[in-house]
Image (cartoon, rainbow over the protein chains, first blue to last red):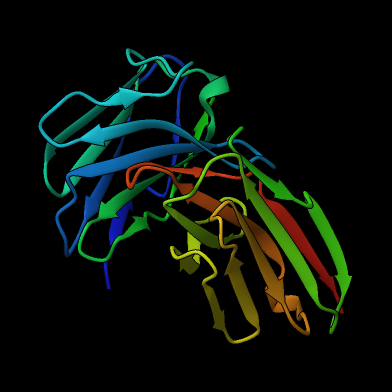
Length: 115
Length: 110
């Protein structure tokens, strides 16, 4: 079945540094990928929609200059958290729209801790 | 998502009991998805419903989508400790992005 690989699964970084998270569709092409954030005891909140070859669409309240999204190919989207601060610590998860299967495939998530 | 309301927020049941989780949308759904998650881990896909009146079952879990495609329920029969976790309903409104309900934290007491 369709698989989305997300790396890293866990990352700890120092405040002020940047962190890149990768999301790859392994056996299908994904023109659209989505990035979510989940805080403790909360649901998944959509941050942005990543479109291959074009700019990402960000949800209201999400800083596009802080959360840089690049979707340079049909199988890879990256989320870079720039100048990370402790309040950015969260669980980030991506998903890819699988047109052939009319569904969404999720990555396994990345736990980011900013110290 | 403000468009999607999920209830209850938490549920504690005795092993062997049945339970129902509801998901209500303020707009007509293109598709309704049910997932299970243990916090901090990925999502486990349970079921997808697209047609009004559709019902699907897998093992002891049954999900339904109403005729108007604005409400879905997830029913677990004879719950077991392995059913414990966070249940999330996700809604696709325009065949594009998916928005999630607040989630239901299920605890099954042995």
